[in-house]
Image: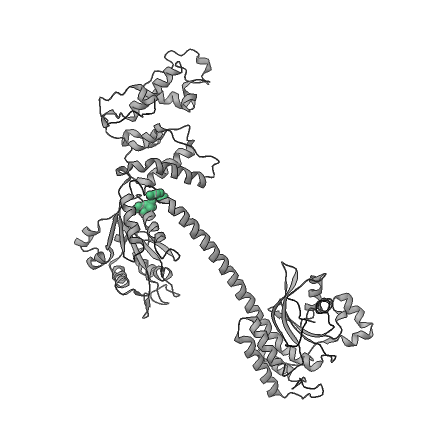
Length: 597
Ligand SMILES: Nc1ncnc2c1ncn2[C@@H]1O[C@H](COP(=O)(O)OP(=O)(O)OP(=O)(O)O)[C@@H](O)[C@H]1O
């Protein structure tokens, strides 16, 4: 048996008659001097001294294998073992082959599955008339100790003619219900204990020295094959894990993205209508718009609504890659294509085959890269830098720019033919100041997003006053700026700080209509009654009136319980400084200054 005896058993064996049935010895007498040879010739050299049964038809039919025949058997076995990565096929083919050289009814490759603490059958072949097979999995007591004992003598082939003498053989015999004879060889590769090859025979004839010689021949190639299989298996497992993770992330991303185009029913209704129309086609798209309006978001939406959604979506920011590298980034390069190209590099387009490439800031693309991009768009193929090979690709190009590409075409810094090829379907994203109706939805979406990112237990809710302040702002940085403002607001403590103070209203609010003087009840009532532009006042005016109204209601008490600060949800000091800034006389008729804490 491969994983043969325990120490205790071995001891006992020396003292009993049964020991004769259970013999194991080093296969090859130590040679005084071995020529410097390869592993293969060494095995061949050593094994040639042994007797191997030429035919299994009768025990007496043994022939001394000559050098050439021995080598022939080894060669054929190696051929079978290395032909296939599937160990089941290897063992089945090996079983058929070995039957011409040794008597066996069953052949199995086994290994010890450490996490599951059990022996596992990996490849298996059996004679058609054999009914009870070695089990697929088997648990024995003290498996680790048992394996230690077996592998400490890893150079030996083990023969067990009495299963009672070996714990694993005993367990197998209990399972099959038969007392069989076993021959096995432990497989070690690079000092790693890989597993073992086990054969059984059901007749009464013991395995002998010639059988052992044959098994010894198999151990190196089998150990190598099994080690390769294990590595392959591990890689397949890792690959599967990555694919699962990738699928989950893609699903999550898709899920996020589906809700991410805020304003699709509002200010982006028209844009999203066009996205729906063009997404499933392969037409190139140019997205234009100011910085931060959501060009990335729309490019993502196009990919996710297209038939390419299961394939890669890769964004390249042409503005951030040095001009000297951009060609190699996009199209890849061959080894030695230029100084420093020490290995072949696969470019983004190749990686994104069957998917979408989003070229942000396409206006930054060098003229030579523009030529290559044109070739991709015209012929659906690329050539790596420094390479002769034409590589066909199936890519959809979406690009974006905040530069005026038509102007660039006019001055010759952007190729006209490429511009026509790209600009099949232009999409313009309006700036946030032109779609302020989206602000409330964007705000609640961004608060939700930031709360998640910042791991906050609850989500702050802005009041109407806050929303009005946000709507009055111009948003030169568009949604990216809104996102930053919200993050700052949340970090500073949403209840304690107003958006106006973050936005610096003096610089960005709409021009002051001058003489507007809305009744303070507008402020107190939450502005529901504002219905016309001339009713809008500046936020400073509004703030002032609102705070004055609150003070009046609170009997001019600023701090303490029931004071205006508490009612306004502000720390007393914050309200006091606002009052100072807005020119509101503090504690005009304050009744209880000591209460101000
Ligand atoms: N419609 C939208 N719904 C939700 N979030 C959005 C929307 N538009 C933009 N955003 C968010 O605003 C931020 C900026 O958006 P994005 O990067 O897409 O802008 P951009 O136009 O590509 O900017 P740039 O021109 O600087 O590259 C991102 O965090 C994005 O998630």
